[in-house]
Image (tube, rainbow, N blue to C red; front, side):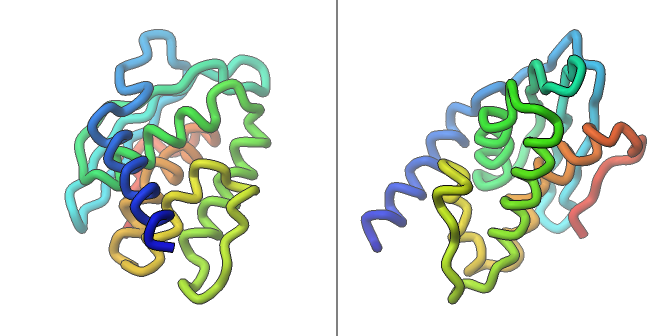
Length: 151
């Protein structure tokens, strides 16, 4: 299990150092801001929805390694997906990080996102991992003018 934890840690560090889709998206038709006041993570999520698909997505912001890596992996995972599929992935991710540590995680249903299963050991870090996801949820619902907060 230690080797798997090391691999997970390396994936998170890689996405923190070299986040994917880290830029403003000039032609976004949905945006949302997220803020985790407990540790200072802040991000702006840019989404271009065409029909029922996420045609493009990106983010900007600052935060801890878990927060930035989560946003990076999330944007990779939902780009090109239907809004319904992105919502379903949000539900699976949220359920994973909220599942007690002694319960198994369905890694097949989450793919690379399973790297965040370890945050369950540190309840304060769940908010870091889920900030981008709650911000995506708000952007797709297009109903939240105020920053999403993970309090």
